[in-house]
Amino acid sequence: MAKKTTSTSSISDSYLEALRAINEWTTVSEWAIKVGEMFPELLEKANAEAKKHKRPSTGIREVAARISSAVAMGRFSAKIEVDESERPKRVKILSEVDAANYEEREIEADLEPLTRAQRIKSDEESLGTKERYRVAELDAIIRQLKEFFNLDFELEHAKAILNPNDPGKHHPDNLQILLKSHNRLKSNENWERFSLQEQIEYVQAVVKVQKLVSTKMKIDLHEEVIGSIIERLKLVY
Image (tube, rainbow, N blue to C red; front, side, top):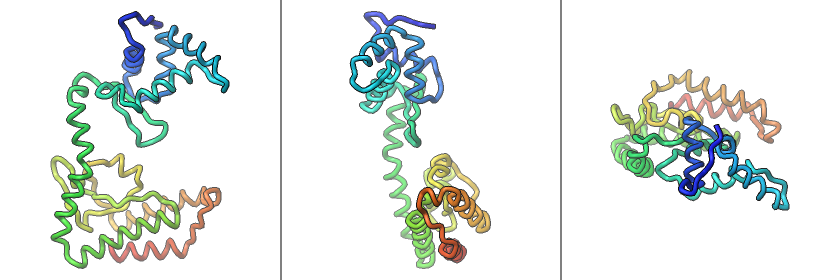
């Protein structure tokens, strides 16, 4: 239903009202479309301004650009949640409860890498030579998969070391190889660690998918090199 902004209702408030009406994760483009539906006078004004531009534009593009700029500058801080793990980024209105805890959660998230690094450093002190070697080899395997085949793997803890209920340790027996995207989904949850066979099959499955686009990406997926990496994985996993 179309609404009109009043003298006491700022444009930012109108933007937030439109996002609240969506009430789920969405993109800036979809958010802008909703603004146009709910506040046609804002869209009409944006259309008029778009016509003045030398480069072709539309009112919706103008609204989306303004929203994107406002999000980037933090004007909706503590009012919306932003997920930049993929493109285009996604946004969601914060509930009253979430908004009340927003600052605390943001501070905790910002400090999380430091907390993780401290725990890893502490655990490393108790590792023997063999365990340190295994960790170093797994790190090297990750780097080579990235360098030679452009595969975005990460070395991650099956039992997350920042899991609030049952944190794991930084130890080679708790490490596995996951795609970055899968690792982000896992976050601080605890998963059962891959068996050696499962880990090999996982890496091989990702390589198989990469082969489908390797020529377009100008990547030489040399079977002998991949086989050598798998053999190294068998020795240290």
